[in-house]
Image (cartoon, rainbow, N blue to C red; front, side):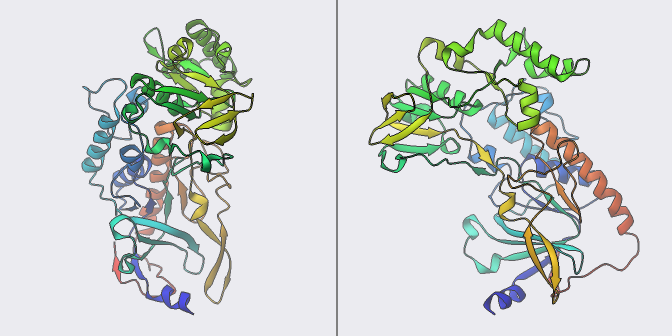
Length: 432
């Protein structure tokens, strides 16, 4: 009964247009594209700023790994004076300018608890609670109701923290890469970096630059490619080659160039996968590492490559090959995951005007659309996904443009003089 009373007493707001969850680059892009089609929208963001991943959960030295022309959002290029690989600050400034240019004003500190499609009235109901400074304030609990729902929380919504035997008794400093800012705090320390992706490699490089002693755990195979070939971006070269050649052949060319420029990386403990880098990215979402200088540090011994972990003990770690390392700190460069399965639901049947719900069938258990790119942007009943292509900002921009065009077409049809559906459970007390 308490739950039912809470259901009726919660503030309800009608959204005149799509409800967008997430104010990162994907959410901003789809809101801007919708404006181009004359469609208003509301963005709900759990943090207190746009692009919170970039602003609050990235290290200081971060730059875009791809040239800026492959990272700009729709309808708004980067400033000409920006370098080819903009810094973290420059990219955040670009996103702030983007939001200002398109007059996008997200609703911050709105943590989405659930989103479900109500078949009774054909509308989406998105329940939020106050986050940040508004956390715990019952007056900030709102249920947003609208015709369309755009999921734009992205591929990196939550950090991945693996279970490691004995880590609780290690006794030293343990953080995730999202909390790492600079190697200054680790000067002179022995640091174990778990993970060998782009973040793990660059954190090791940063630690070296601050006179720390990093050891990097490489458990799986990994593709390492040069960031540039003869002054041209490796990614740009791959895009150009794929216009004329099949993917498997482009993969072979990239691997040959990597061997020519970087040498045999396997003798340094970096095993290459049997699948090519582009095919692996397309099929499994595993991004190749673009070398920014870490490989030279590995060759010189400044970065030590070690195999998988067996267990931790006080002040040390035992590896699967029997080695024991004394370490002071641990950094988990273990990546991120989608959080969509935690809050997105769809109705299965109707009972006394209430919808019984289960996990959304459009998304798989890992929080990505089941339909692969380029067709994974649209679900049923007004549900859309932007930024889950595993193809970076270019993929998010493609999703945003398609989503906005589709909604724009329906918006024109549905805004013709007609009776608008209303919420079936209670009257909305506000309209957005």
